[in-house]
Image 1 (cartoon, rainbow, N blue to C red):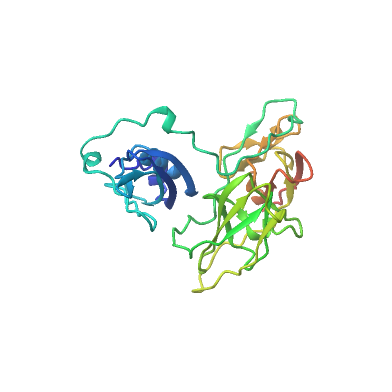
Image 2 (spheres, rainbow, N blue to C red; image 1 turned 90 degrees about the vertical axis):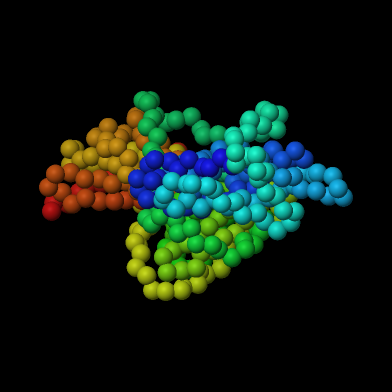
Length: 333
């Protein structure tokens, strides 16, 4: 059995996470298709997927003949290098890796049995850039706290044609879409500056969690024949213990794709989601920052002798404009 390779940066940050995959096992025990049910940041999901594609399973048997069947594999990352992975299969036919897989790596499945991994949340094609200069893509947003990895109750299945609305409390609950942090409930309630959470076709897993509350998950099946255009989650999270957490402010702007800044003083520097520093005057409409969507991004602005400010900007295909321009003045300390 090939163990996942723990990404070096995730180890350095002591990042934990749980990856849940749905795997189609062939009649010969090969993993024909790997689907992402729950992911984790900083390469953990990709490491789990790559390892599972190299596993070999004992195929399920029906009426004495091997058959294709789906199973679930759960791989916890606990901020230490793996000695061995720990798959746990869903109820149904028992599938276990063969002993030979533990002794030597098996050859990779033939290309015909390894379809490309489907994107968990495909984005519509973006319109042409309003900028004349080169674009700088920001890193993805980072959650205020590492994902807890706590098991949530069995997720209900909702259906919609295009989007999700979050109408629950607390509005500070962190939202993870297919394992990727995309903001808080207040960002995706379609109220007071919030938008609907857009979803591409196919299945998606939405996870809500907040320190001190029991996590909640729901599976959203997005299909053209769904009865509702927008699915809605209104189940409030259940508090289990009083624990402090970072309270995030509402987003100051929305954009489909790009961000420009007008900052005083002109010697200020900008970081997006903790990424590299950029000189604030260079982040213009002619050379904006490209913000991955959907997601809410932390824009940190600082300058000598001035109080630092952190703003949140929401990027989503259903925002009203391709480019948002935010004006910021830093106060003296």
